[in-house]
Image (tube, rainbow, N blue to C red; front, side, top):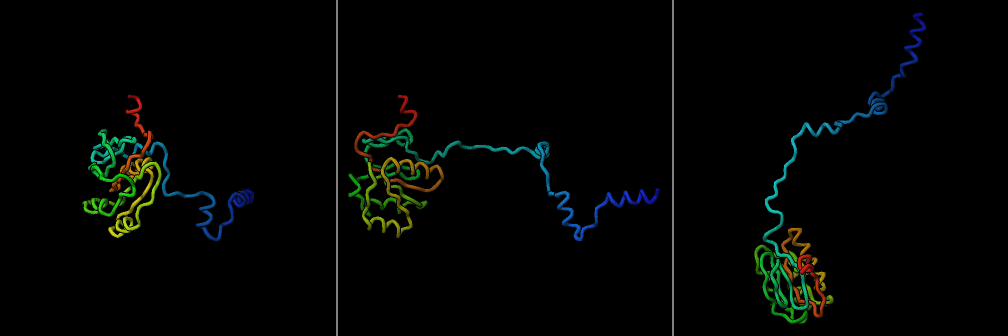
Length: 185
């Protein structure tokens, strides 16, 4: 009887592995932590307090037309320059009138403008190389696009919190981007 019991115990046990660590991983994976739905109750809930739902100081372009732009609910007629907290009329008629002097406002400001988005009307036009070189020397990136895309790019960069400016020429013709509030009027 004792021999039968000894043989049973012998066959139930496995041979001892050469490395105990490998056998432990093979049989039963050990994890440093196991989470279950009940574990959330062990920790306090995270609370988020929103002080402001939008950036009140940011300037956003609501719509554009051949006559001008609607910026933060205010209508601006003709070409304009948008700065982080300001809208300024811009004294240019077309992309050919853009000079180093007309961009001088962007490098005089503090905090420093990172990127200037230029809207040149219905289609993307090339600016004078001297103008682009002057901006590059002052550490300001310039993105030249047609006005509809420049408006969207400016809004996107402002939403990201980037310090950006825009120089926009209204597109000629009857093209318009209407915000949802204006579409219902």
